[in-house]
Image 1 (cartoon, rainbow, N blue to C red):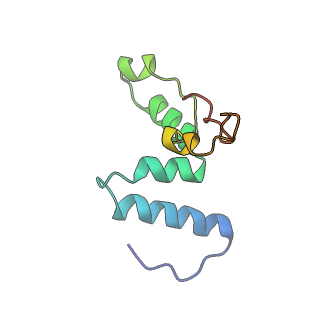
Image 2 (image 1 turned 90 degrees about the horizontal axis):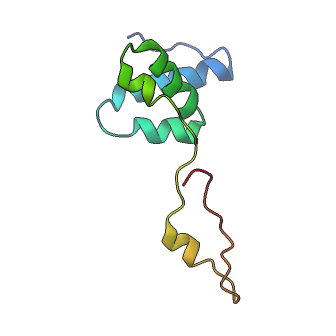
Length: 93
């Protein structure tokens, strides 16, 4: 790959960083967390399901959340005097 000489706009720079992270960190287990953090997990996974011609992926082709679960111990330590947590679990977990 050639070095980037300029970034004409923010969208181009964002795509370049995402592409570089995908190449540099392949097989290191960071991809999923990047997709969720960037808010593009759902569209990326569903696009992948569309391009693969496998019945199992089609059957599993639902995706419900772009969020990670909040650890239960973090919810527990935010409980007020009445025992009600101030953190609420993300939808789907």
